[in-house]
Image (cartoon, rainbow, N blue to C red; front, top):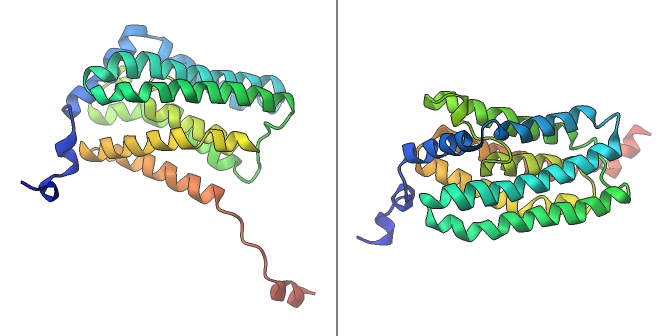
Length: 229
C-alpha cells in the first residue's frame, strides 16, 4: 500500500463517538463552569459601548484565561487521552494566552483597543457563533447541551471567538489574534472532515469570513471620480 492509498480518516487516532463523548465528560467534570466564558463574552459585547475601557480589559483577560484553561484543562487533561499528538499543542495555548494578556493590556492602556466599524459585524458573528452554535451543535449528534463545545473549554469555539475579537480590534492585536487560532481552525476542519461531520463547514466559513473581512477595500478609480465631477 502506497501513501496515495491513504485517506484522511485513516490517520484518525480515535473513533468519532469517542471524540464527541470527550466533551461531555470534560463538561461534566467541572459543570457549570463551561458556561462561564460564553456568558462573560456576551456581557463584554453588550456592555462595551457604555464601559469601553473597563470592558476592553475584561475581554483581554477573559480571552487569556480561556486559552490557558482550554490548553491546561481540556487539551492536556482530556484530549491527550485519545490523541497523544495533542500534548505538543499545549504550549501554543499558553503562548496565545500570554500574547493576548501581555500585549492586549498594553494596547488598552494606550486606548488602541477599539472596535473597527468595518469589521464589527463579522467579529460579532464569530463571537456569538462560537458561543451559541458550537454548544447547540451537540443536539445534531443526539447529545444534550452537556455534550456541547463551549468557548474556553473546547478548542474550536475558543479559537473562533478569539478571531472574532481580533477582527473587532485595531492595530497589532489583530495580528496577535490570528496565527494560532487559525491553526486551530484548520486542525478542527481536518478532524471534522476526517470524521465525516458536517461541522467541518464551520471552520471553513470562519476562515472565509476572516479573509473577506481583512481584504482591503477597493479604491474608486480616478476615471470614475472624474466622471462624477
